Image (cartoon, rainbow, N blue to C red; front, side, top):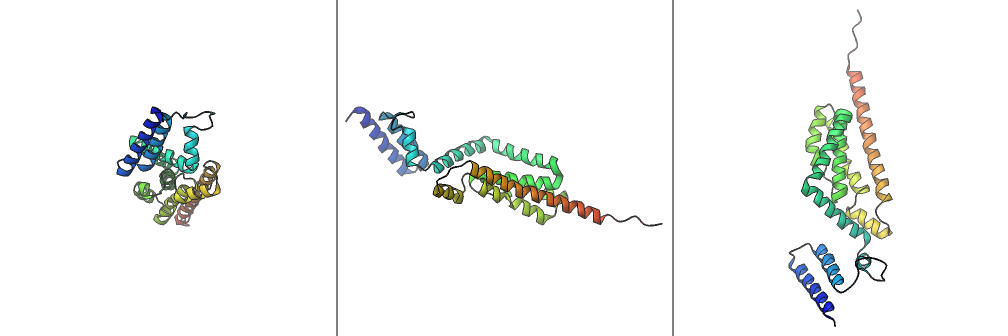
Length: 217
């Protein structure tokens, strides 16, 4: 056995020890430790070779799960830097400019849905605590505000990347992310759009029929 292989095996043992102690995330530790050990053993990272580190990872890990891991890392960085908060705030401000109360609650629901799509769970309260009262003060019925923001779950479920049910469907069907998410997003945004139009229609009709007729002299 060569020195190179002995070092690789020692690194693998070290990886197992770290995983057992629980000091680091188990999945990330397993993938990283195994990749480093394979690299030390002489396997190329990628390329046309019969066996590469990338091929071993892909063959040992369902591509959907691998994609989910990368997405979670990406979102974690966005949250840590505060960039995700900036995006949500801009969406709400854009909704206010677009259509007052109905625009605010619709944008709040979409923002919460985007958070759910990226993180695996949708909590409309993340934005509803701000956009809900604002939309009500701008003339939108409280029940309609709650209903619109509850549609956030449609984006999280249909256009998401980490929802357990969606991951199971993709893995079972043997397909990946892509067109599935695009079509899901279109369907979810269509629901938001129709809800927005309906609220606008109700507000216009309410204002029209609540306006007193001029008295006849």
